[in-house]
Length: 262
Image (tube, rainbow, N blue to C red; front, side, top):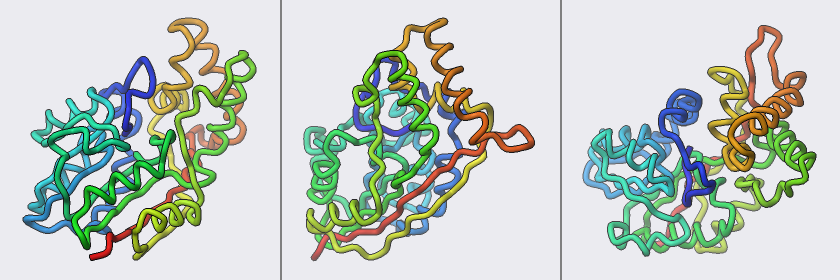
């Protein structure tokens, strides 16, 4: 997954992500059409992950730099031949390669991981854009993966671990996030909040160990971790599992195009 900091001691595993979460980039492929990159543009992919969409943007002839908080994911993006750097989304100017301005900043499935100070992230993006530059993104919106989120928190609480100390996600409403963008100085050109029920490629336990690592890895590897994942899975079996045995995750997405004034 995408990130702006090493959000848990275990870190991201690019191979697990490719196996259990490739749908994240696949289902957002048309977000690149919202970006509409052109040859010669300079574009920052914020939270590039393993570079699947960064690669598509580069194929349009744009000069793209990927940035992600996970060194493992940056390494995977670099293995695709992409220019990618480890960076914190709240402090983009701290990375020399990003001490410049761009025609556009693109972000998919990353902003909701930047929970500590979402306004600082928006302001950092604003500062890195040229006048007239655009910010095009998709993130988890209010209600995203609600039953999974609730089950993870409930089972952590049942084990006397405060859920707020583990929870890495920020899922704002469309109104809340657009207000944040406007506060930073952006003009909103387009936005869309929508439900996207998503069939998982395997068991929900694989999703949990790949995409909910801040919750899962707080438990010691072995029986304690296995028991936690099994308990969360049990909570979800009745609500998420489709009658043919497939798992459907209730994703809710927020997309927008915001522009920095000239």
